[in-house]
Length: 488
Ligand code: UDP
Image (cartoon, rainbow, N blue to C red; front, top):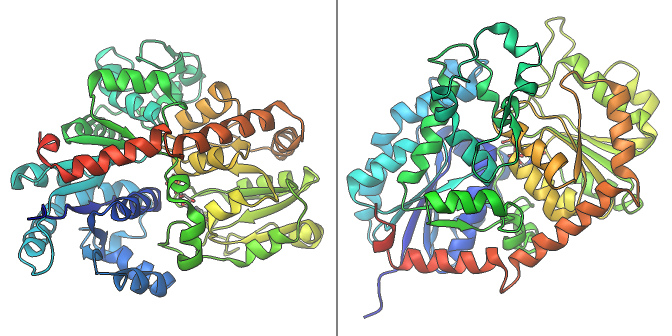
C-alpha cells in the first residue's frame, strides 16, 4: 500500500511579510506532492477575498483539492485594529488567543473524509503558540523564519545582550546620543562586528519588560523547538552565520530566494503575481508604464506593508526622487502616511505631481516581484524588509535603504556593508541624500550595480537543479514524507 500523503498545515503570522513567503513555500511543497492546508486569519481571509477573489477560488478548485484554505480568528477585537501598536497588539492577540482555534482546526481536518491526517504544522516566526499546539498534539513541526539568517541569530542573542548588560538601554539619552551606533557587538557567532542598533529595532528600549523585546527574544529562541527551521536565504549569501546557526541547530533548510525557486513567471500568469495572495488590491497597470521605459532607467520606491511615514518624510522622499533626475515609480500604500491632523489626507506635497508628472508614476500596492524583475527597474528605494531585500538581490537590483523596524537594520547592514549592493540613508530623511544615493546606485558601471549583478547570478545558481536551495527543498519534501525525524 502506498504511504499516506504528507499533509502540512501552514500557519503564517498574519502580516504580508510572513503570508507571502509562507504561501510561496506552501506552493513549492504542494508541487512536491504535499497536501497543503493554508491557514489565514478570518480578518485577512476577508481582505484577500476582497482583493483577489479569483486567485483564492482558483486555487481552492485546483486539481484534486489538495491545496485548501482555512481561517481562524486572530483574537483581536475590531476596535483595536486601527490602534497605533497594531503589529505588537496583533502579536499579543495571536499568541494568547489562537491556540484553541488551531487545535480545533487540526482535529476537524483529521476527522474530514478525503483529507489526509495532518503530518506537520508549518508555522512562521512569531507563532510560537502554534509550536506548543504541535507538541501537545504530537504533530511534527517546522518554522519558516521570515527574515535572514543574520537577523535570526541577532534576535536569538537579545537574551545574551540583556545578560551582558547591553539591554535594556540605561536611559533615554542612549536613543539619540550615538550610543546605538558606537556600541559594537563583536561576539555573535558568524556575524561581522555590528552596532547594537543594527541588531534589531527592539533594542531601542529602556524598559526591561518591553513587550517587543521580550516577544522577539522568546520567539526567535523558540524557533529551535521546531523539528526543523526553514530560511528564505541561500547558503552562498550568508555562509558564516549559517554555519554558526547549524552548529547550534543542524536541521536547517535554506531554500531562498523563494520567489526564484517558485519561478514566479508561471504563478504570475494565473494569480496576478507575487505568489498569488495579496491583502491589498494589486495595481498591475504600473507594469504597462514600466514596459514603456528604457532598460535600467527607473527608480522604484516602496516601503512594504507596515512602515509609516510622516507627510514631511514623504515629501523629502518624493522631491529626492524627482531631484535624482531619473524616472521613478513611487508606491503609496493606503495607510502609508500618518495623517497630520490637518485633514490633508496624507498624499504627495502640493504641486509635486504638476512638477514631476512627466517622469513619475504613482502606484498603491503593486506586484512587487514582477516590478523588481522588470528590465526597466534600475534601483529600489526600500524600507529593507527581508522579503523586499531578498527579492531585490534575486532580481539584481541595487538598493537605497531606509530601515526602521525589527530586522530591517540588520538587512540594511548586510546589503550595504557585506554584499555591497546598496547605500544607506540617514534616519532623518533629506531630499539631497535621497537624490545623491539614488544617482550613485543608478550609475550603469557603478560598483553597487556590479555587485548586484554578481549576487543575482549567485541567487540564480542556488535555485537551479544541483544548487543549494533547490536541493534543500527536495530534502525538505523528503523529510515531510518521513515524519519521524521532525519530531522534537
Ligand atoms: N509587496 C507587494 N507589493 C507592494 C509592496 C510589497 O507585493 O506594493 C510584497 C513584497 O514583494 C514582499 C512583501 O510584500 O514580499 C513585504 O515584505 P517585507 O518583508 O519586505 O516587508 P514588510 O511588509 O514585512 O515590512
